[in-house]
Image 1 (cartoon, rainbow, N blue to C red):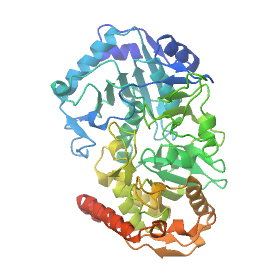
Image 2: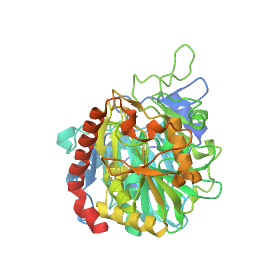
Image 3: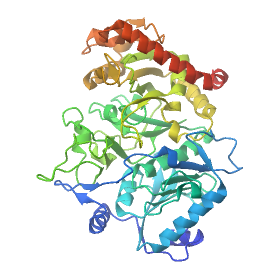
Image 4: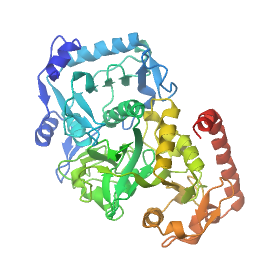
Length: 520
């Protein structure tokens, strides 16, 4: 395989700056501090502030139009096309920018704990702290027998700015995906999450075409090896609910499901920090120590400690840390086939039950719909929750046509007799601004009851508006919480909101009815 210096020459950089490859966390921390890229908190955690971009910028993400893959891509708002000519124009700007840098930082490792599905990854960054981030979120193992044609490369240069419409994009920021050449260009944004999700998007293109389902979910394993998956968009509870001291953590966000079972794609976790509570989320809280990197959390001037309640910069405050910081992790980051799957939805209408048992047909329907609410801060411009349908609970990262994912999901849950549940981690007793956020202890109690097998022995009743089966009782959960109708003071208001959400589901279903009918 080419060295990074040779790669930069190969792509057309006339002047190649010094390349700092696979530096240690200590070295990267020292450089980031010396260049004022970041600061240290009182307890020695590297802390960076990303400025204007404090979340992903989906409107600035484009996929290069190529005849080689045009027929398999789900073109639309999540996969906006950019011509190869416009792409090459921005690529030239990226190369010119690299030539001006005093040095670049490179992480070389892999994505995917399953050797049969792993890919080699090369991440070239302008900032030392971005290389630090990449080394936490990716896997350090090299892929045996890989060659240059196998490598997926990200070039991340926040200081390189696009010129909006002139360059064929929307702003100074850009995330450009070229599946043919296994390449992503990132510029104009310091938000490190774009790196992580670019790797995920590439695997969501590659793996399903090889019969492996790539999933936006966290995963845990019980003492007997039973695996549970938690699907959901950012802010719905994937990381929080998978940080369970009674179970082993496979990973908190991105997984694959192959004939061998479930495996983590990443080597670390990327958790939200807003209102982080050491009692409710002790594992995440204790992971914020030297060796982690924190984004956009305000540090108190008087004490040098974090103020996790301060959302003045963003609601989307984050910490990245290695899996090793979770004492209950599964060292192999692999498990068997799942026994239970949970679809996590933050329902801003406040009308979905806290938990519902799904039939196979309902599981396919809700997987396809991917209903949740976009939560404040996870994307630019989101100030309060917005109802949103996101294919497979991860549409922004799913480049292929929907039937690829849905057919694979159907086969896997059928072959392995998986139970599927819909879990509302959003609002109850009223919609956003009226009701309150679902109690985390109640959600944990309901999920624990599923994992221990006790909920399956409970009696169930059918909810009136969505046809969902909901339990009539569960230990440690008040009975009135289980049926959302009973949690609202005004039953008429509940019925009105429930009908409104049913209407939105029907509108969304109309777009994908043919796909669902074909797969079922």
